[in-house]
Image (tube, rainbow, N blue to C red):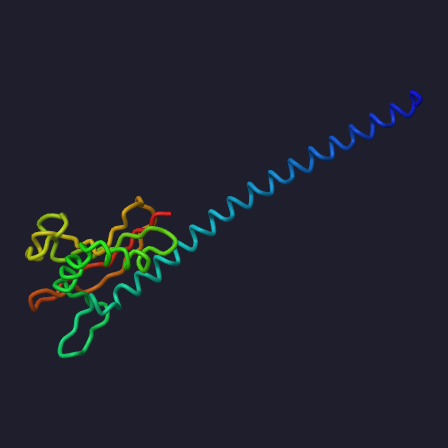
Length: 173
């Protein structure tokens, strides 16, 4: 082989190396942009799931106010919430509701007393008088931090009286 053939072969190899490097850089850029879009989509799905869950929780018969078989929308019976909290102490039942409440991201669900303003903003325990505490955590996943917060005003019912409150869904993405 002559010198001219060797030079052409080296030029060809150099061009192939440059093309391979450009392809690798392009693939890395594509996967990085895809990963960020996937993360953004996950966040959007989590947000939509929180909105949907907020509506669903206020309509669940486990929490809704009912008198003589008639249910009232946007009204939460605190006695039912307390009973549900007690029910969730069973690990098997908690696990079943974990799939329903959490979905693609961990979500914490709670009801908060807004008016009259509670004496303490502490977590309410079973049998504790409404007003002496301010919030009832219905469901808290084992893992997850604070992310986006969605809330809606609701009526809280306890002991024949109505109070102003809000339903809150905290989603950690």
